[in-house]
Length: 212
Image 1 (tube, helix red, strand yellow):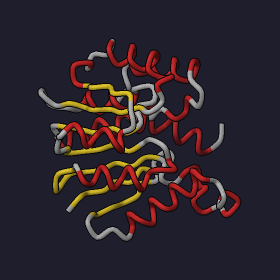
Image 2 (cartoon, rainbow, N blue to C red):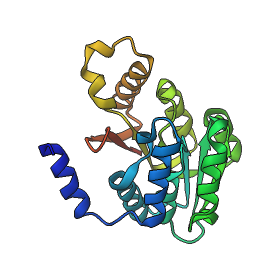
Image 3 (cartoon, helix red, strand yellow):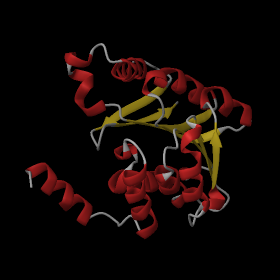
């Protein structure tokens, strides 16, 4: 086991457990879905729950449901009456994801929607308190602008994968469209005076953004 792997084991041993349901979802995601590592997983999932518990949002928007792991984690941190509205553009994932969300202990706090959040989320007519962006990296900037337009002042945006396996500083990936999307987003947010921001080097990079 490498030093990094040993450190990861140590971190998880000293972090709250994810619980049996999420563990089984993580296993099923990696067995039955392509790119299973896209699911948030134990450490980031506990961080998402903690951040929701700290911020105490009423309405959360998620862009990119994937298998539902992160939506469930955020819903766990919600107060009574709170709701996660999660959008997944890939309708081929619906059968897998919907059963895991619907059978979860927090199903009543999650609204799972198949569709393009960029066009459909504003139609909900909701002022969101928090958002988690984890969809198509090529359209991160467009997603961010949409989210910011329906986020209340003082609200928070979490953007996942903003270090993109280190590809953002590796010129070998300069022509990769997803890397370009992340780099464009990172530069745009860094220069956006409407928000405060910080990148956390957790997992694949998580940017915390606060709308002024």
